[in-house]
Image 1 (cartoon, rainbow, N blue to C red):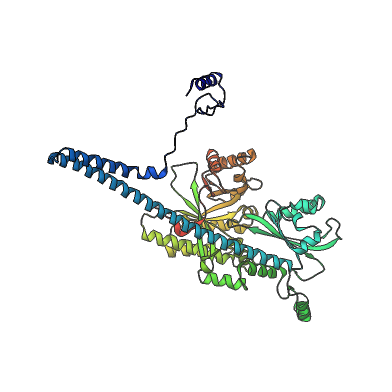
Image 2 (image 1 turned 120 degrees about the horizontal axis):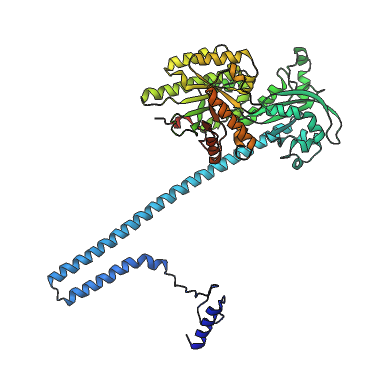
Length: 546
């Protein structure tokens, strides 16, 4: 570096300049320090450097042996050093080869898994696309207007007749709020009925309806609620048809009308209802498109008789008291189809409800849960008696023989009765029906436990519990979902927890979907929680309790 260059560098450092534009000096950073770039070592040189070092060492040792006039002591010493170097090189090469082979095996496994997952995803997407198109074709062929509204009151599906009635393009209907599509005036008139449908009630009514610039139409309207696996309302299906057209009547046609006009009506409209109600026909059509069942009643009966259902479960864990080791499981059900595919309950529960087979489903669940538990308890004496929570249909609650069936299954499988906890919905409890109180009392008398589901979803009242003593209160999922952001939900849950402890009941929070929610529930002194933050639904055969 010449004298002029040195002076420039010194001046740049003193003045804290960003760079010095001189071609024969090193670059200077913004803080005034010189940036020294070290030459990068080639990867191949790094790999072969141990071998080159060993060869060089071997050359030095051989030269030393030669210049010591082949003295045997020096030969032995230097030969040992050379042997140790070669051994170290071989060991390093062996380790490298083992590491490479392990990495290759891992990469191969990951590649195979990715290929399988990609193929499964493509297959699922193709099946979903086919099902959606089949459903679209079916609904567009119907003369009734069909729309699906989710829990947020957004229209997620509609058919051609519904769209033409509104006089709107599909883009202005799909995903839009119901009140925006119908208009605030029309929505205000049906808001109470929409709320009833989202509460899980089937709604039937007639009204003269005018939307936008359309002509008034006398409509028969039906809202069918849609439930998930935990009997939570996910939305509802709206069926609208002209009141003057008998095609989709919810009542069967009389025999004379059927005989007189069957052939003519079938020629004019293949979807006409003859000897079955419109709701039944619609259910058959939807079920056939979604599941491939041409006769859903016969298919479901065959599945029950052939034991084709599968038990699933979701963990319920203690969140307030870490010392509590007792675990529980919410029992779920799936239907096995071809190629190990599983049909979710949303596809077959409406069929069971339509054809009065819900109590048969409940009996199947009780029988198989107790059989599964009894088998594992006999095989392992250390098997823990967990609690299995079973949601019951209304038909089972009002079935006079159901409790006796449970008692007999407990005796046959030699299972203690306290492992079963039957869930009764808050709606059933507040109905005040004497059969509900008798049902709860009979279950407790044989040693089973009872939980009250959806507690706190509406007006919180503990007066019902005076005449309906239960062991667990399952807090409504909407309260739990909003517990982080909503102080009102926090206050409700805290009050429920305090009163429950006073009256000797345990609390279970549903839909605990994150660790933040679980931590908040622990602060509010909730006993147990259930949700994806605790565990996702899985086959009951994957449960290992010791």
